[in-house]
Length: 234
Image (cartoon, rainbow, N blue to C red; front, side, top):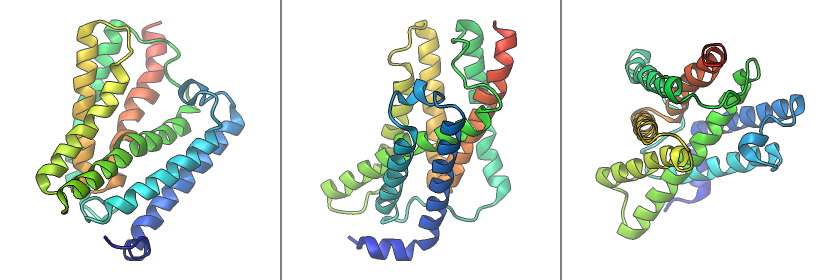
């Protein structure tokens, strides 16, 4: 296995990009915490937000040190904008399904952070979710596969890891929700497919593309619909 130093040197642009994202993430957490000390409490409990931000950033960098060994997943690479646009379009379908469920079961009025704080809050949460639910578990799984099979993970094993990772967020989202079974199944399938789309973008393109898909989803679901639903449903 390559040394950590060789990984850092060979993938200098990757870690510089990731470090830049992490610094923006930490800065936004600090800015939001200073302006509203309770803004993260609903999601992070009583833990100091900047501590979580630093830990998440360190975990993200460590996870990428593992992912970059096999050269299958990267933080950033140049790509054609038109081809990525076709990947992003299905996100509107996933958002529409989420809105359909909300329209019928009506989630709590306070489930979203209100505008304008939402413009900073959801990019922060998006980065946190990508590291915790995608980058970290994917790195751990592929590392374990490499250790078990004593070789670089095959395309089949990478697919297995991606499917397992895609199960995490939808299961977490619905496991304790007290909503009708049809709504839980719809939400679970919708989120699973969205996660798979993200992981495919991660594999085909890079982390920045996967993160961009979540920001696109959050823009329509949490920010735009999050504001409209307060007038339409309450």
